[in-house]
Image 1: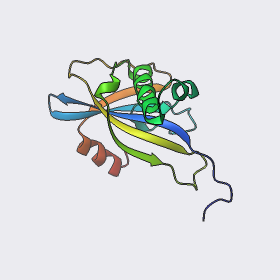
Image 2: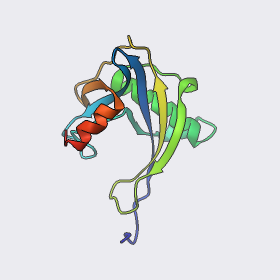
Image 3: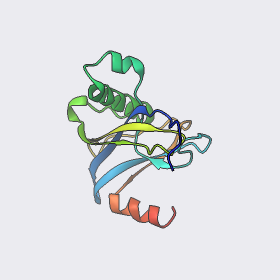
Image 4: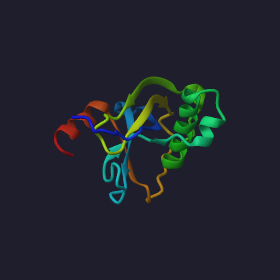
Length: 143
């Protein structure tokens, strides 16, 4: 049953960062701090909200999403992605029944195998390069 007044979704952007690693294709996952109310203690892709100034400074929300994706990736991983290298592949909005809602743009970006990830040990506690199927297998196993 839908709530009478669903929460308005906040604009957000996420990047699936990939690389060709020693064991083949890998994606980057980040472990969020358990103290956070949203997705605390969960492995996630780099990303976050689109700031109002990013929307005001760009031609449209898609461009603002790219800017936010780049900024969030750099803040969370110290990786420097380029907007031209981002590939948009999905826009998804959290269901209306959820108390926190996001209208998220999903992008794919790639880095060289030698790219060094550095997390702040505050918002992000750890990182992991992993084959997508291995990540799915871990999820199914409750890990």
